[in-house]
Amino acid sequence: MDKKRQFMFRLVIGVVVITAVIFLSFKYLLKGPPFIKVLAIGLIAATGYLVVDNLIKKSKENE
Image 1 (tube, rainbow, N blue to C red):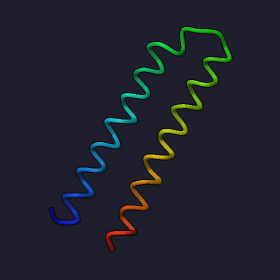
Image 2: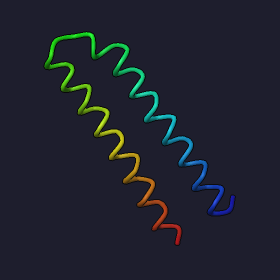
Image 3: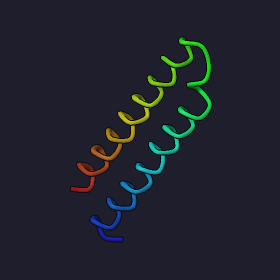
């Protein structure tokens, strides 16, 4: 696979992971007490940060 196609594949997988976390957080975790709601928002933020960080790291590694 060339570098551009590999990056696009990682980007699509990252978007799927972030979307799945957001869906599960809103569906199950936000129906609980306020403490669980804060944890759900933290989970969304942490997952988004880790996916973007991984994409940037792999992009720099391939150059």
